[in-house]
Length: 377
Ligand SMILES: NC(=O)c1ccc[n+]([C@@H]2O[C@H](COP(=O)([O-])OP(=O)(O)OC[C@H]3O[C@@H](n4cnc5c(N)ncnc54)[C@H](O)[C@@H]3O)[C@@H](O)[C@H]2O)c1
Image 1 (tube, rainbow, N blue to C red):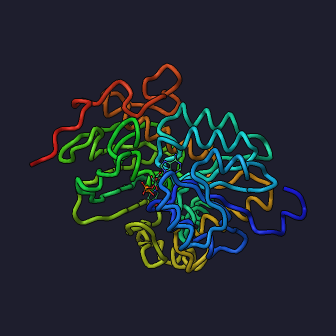
Image 2 (cartoon, helix red, strand yellow; image 1 turned 45 degrees about the horizontal axis):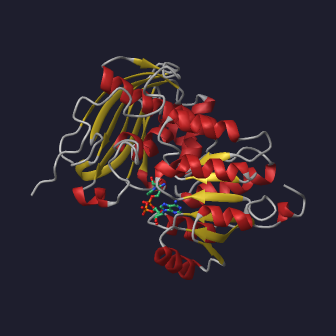
Image 3 (cartoon, helix red, strand yellow; image 1 turned 45 degrees about the vertical axis):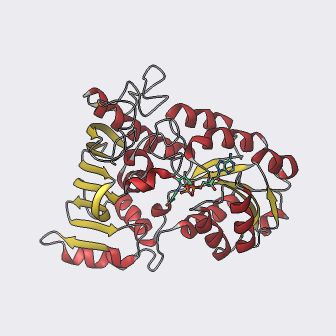
């Protein structure tokens, strides 16, 4: 980025003006140093309403025409992908090919092979590919990452990482949801990725996973629940549940360190009040002292990630969450499917080009019929 641009707001274009796009627009407006200058959606009415609501100056009927006019680093700094997940690979490659960085909504891609294709199109110094994982960026997560780095709470021994959400059959009426080819998987990929990515950003990397998945109630192709035991490289055992069947919803992390239990209970975003720290007997003073450190009052959310992105662009580094870090999370998810569908323990590094789970989360096939069952009458 040249010197002049370094003092100007980052020019953002947005692809896909559906449900999550409004959060991007609102948080781009709230964060200093970013400006939404263009948008595209194949649905012209949705695009028109979105542009009117958020004062977007330029709209385009498709990504190709947007890139035809604005597809150079002289015109755009970042394109946000808020499109269905099955489109992220092709769209990211088109944008990176124009020298423009990409921030993609989760999941970054449907498979490791697609993410590796994207990573091959990144260049040192940019363009970069980054993924939305907004719960990494709340103040208490930043605090806990520093506590873990310093070793203040001792070794992590065990924990849980739960996504107990509720999605009725109607949620799957959106054409891309629930199908291997378009959504890529069920809650293990599409929803639990938030908590799993936050977990790994705090206490990763991971070594091994043993998992079970099932389709119990929803009329979809993919799983509607999975349970996994993940062994982290530091030795801790973490239980991970991903569910769309759970009427009392919660997103929860629990981390039992030698000197304290740290818990986070929220749903789609947290504040400081959603965290609880319980000292081990004899560690009360240590925990009390640690709690005053680090940022307070910064909720998790896209705004917190966008602020971190502005800082990264200004310093010329990769954008958070960078593609290498996103790959580790996606690899654990692929390994969870591989373990659930083959019965094997799957270690980090096992899923390479020879594995069917490298190119698809469905891999060698789920232990239930590929087609979704008929919906109840
Ligand atoms: N980070 C979060 O908390 C969060 C929450 C919800 C969804 N998401 C992710 O955001 C993405 C979008 O989800 P959503 O719920 O907003 O979906 P959505 O279906 O509501 O919106 C997708 C939009 O993309 C448009 N679109 C489809 N094909 C297109 C194309 N070729 N070019 C341009 N636009 C196209 C559709 O018309 C639609 O308006 C998904 O990857 C999803 O997983 C993230």
